[in-house]
Structures are given as C-alpha cells and as structure tokens.
Image (cartoon, rainbow, N blue to C red; front, side, top):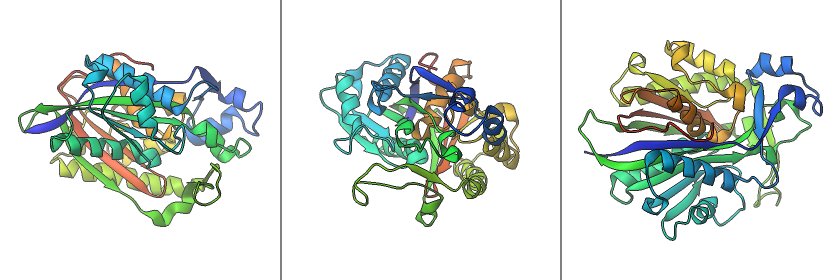
Length: 330
C-alpha cells in the first residue's frame, strides 16, 4: 500500500535567545511568575534579517540533508504559518526560490498552532493519491512580530522558529511505516479565546495577539487528550502502544495535565516549551528534531497533536521505520 513516510526532519531557530530575566527588564513580569504559570524559561526572537521565510528555508535544508534528498527532488511544499512574510504570494514560494527549486507545487496553510497538522494532512492526501512523491511540510513563525509587548499575559508565551519534515511516497506493508491516522477539527465559535485583532479585510493592519488564558487552558486540556485518543482509535491502537508523544508546546501545565488524562508516563511526552516557548505552527515539527536526535528507535510509534486558535485542533498517529533526522538546528 502507498503511504507517506517521514524520512527526515529539521529545525531552525533565530540567533537571539531571550531569558525570562531579560524579558523582565522591559515587561512587568518576573522569571518566577512566568515559570510558575507556563514552565517557560527561554524563547528565541527573530532579528531584522530573520523572517518566517528564512527560518523555514533553513529548517527545510536541514530536513532534506537528514533525508538524503536533493532540493530538486521535491515536488510539493506546504508551509503552515500565521505570520507570512507578506500577504501574497505564499511564503512557500519564497522558500521554493531560496532552495533553488524551479518548479513545484507550493502554498501556505493558515491554521495557527494546528497549521502543521493541517499541512501534513494535505501533503499526506496528495501523496496517497499520486499527486506528489516528495513533499516538504514546514511550520514556521515569527510570532514576535504580532505580540503586544506591553501585555504580559501574551508576550511571555510565544517565540519564533521553524521546523520541517520530508514526506516521501513509499509502498509498504499494512503494518509498515508511515502516517496511519489523522484527525482534524475546528470550532469557530471560540474565536474570541485566542485571536489577532487585525487583518487586511477588517482593519487594514496586522494586529496583535489577544487571548483569554484561563478559558484557553481549559479547552486545551480537554481537547488535546480527546483528539489524541480519537487518532489512536482510528489507527486501532491504545495509549499504551505509543512510544512517544510530540504535543503542541504551549504550556507545561497543559502538557502535564494531558499526559495524566491519557495515562502516559511523563518520559514519553516530548517537552521543550521551557526552552523555546510557544512557536505556533513550528511547535510540533521543530520539537521532532531534538527528539529524533536523542536516538528514537526506528520502530517507535509517535503521536502528534495540537489544539489552539478558534478551537482548531488536530491529531496525527504515525509509525516510522525509515531514517529520521539526526541533525538540524536544535
């Protein structure tokens, strides 16, 4: 059977690393306040010459190197981002040009923190139908550009970065590697929980991030666990079958609560929110690289999930026996 198999991962971070202590010099907050509520200790902030596109291209190069693929073998680029370099054309086409690819399908997906899983689903579907054979799926953000740096409830939570995976078409046995199940949801009734107060069609401005943190936390814990369970059921598995989970890195307390809800041991849950903060669509793919670099078994099963922004959520279940990244910007 034809499946999309992850053969390489890569990530990229901006040069500037900002600690809570440094942030407290300009924002009314403290290291203790941030750590107690979120678990976050550091985040990376893009400089003037670092954009969503440049970070995405760096992550893509690392993923291609890990997969042993040349850029001209890529026939599909799907870039998940809520912070594109420009309104149009798609930032994916800028990445395409930076990689030196003359012709391939390239477009952006906008589903904020769920965006990478939406992008994976699109690429997986195109590969399964034969419309693509080698895809770059990227999540990249420069959320620092849309933060209100006087709002300590939001500005301390986010960071910039990018992550990418190479998906290749492979003919495998039914119990072979590849993406096994994916479940996506959205509920626009919760728009006011987490949103940006601007846009080309409404205010003509970019806007800033606004959030009702308490309500978001409650929805996140409930829905992260439920969508992962839903994906496992679709794959015919149970939580005990999972070797490791790569969840959206929004808040350490959310990750702890979700693991308990699923009955998963803490060591099976990848946690890097303390080092990188919430990087939105870059969260899952950029977290996959350090996990792979620590020596994940080639037969490990992984479950990835995200839930955020207007109740858009997703879960993905995969089993990989092919090569995973042992390199990349971490």
